[in-house]
Image (cartoon, rainbow, N blue to C red; front, side, top):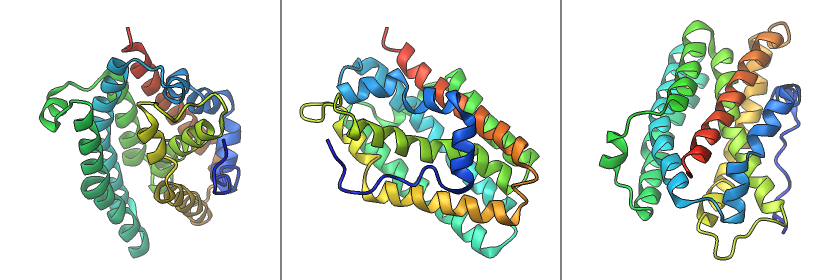
Length: 232
């Protein structure tokens, strides 16, 4: 099973270095058993619905984090980029997520009424705390595993012979994270992190950035753990 596009440049620049140095934490995230079950089409629907609800709640805080990034930005270009990210989440990604969830019998009102899981709270508040305590680069290091990690996890699935797309109830989810638009967003974010690192002293601060990135990666894996646990 081959993709028509070249592999994502996941080993490039500052992100590539963070990804490599996160080691086993990164691997356990992008190759999580929850993801593999999505690819095989064997994930129990109750687990996927639970994940979808928590992902809806997560997106709200993801938008808040990018709004915080606007405040932390020192240039108009960075403000515009992060404002565009907020708009994309609120006006594009969230409506698409709500529409997709409706196909699984979940209304926005239902999802809004569900309490946040501890894993959702831990991850989102960690990202916001890193942004509040640090600068824009600290915040982006905490955000990076989400966008890039979903891109890598989905790309691995479509390249894996064990993945079943025909008749797979999760094929649409996999397609969303391997779409041209999503892949372009990943590439843009990798380049943007490089530019930000160059202007914000990433080399001197690398150990702290790696600690942030690795912690966020572990929290991402815990988010999959949450979904996986809901299958029972």
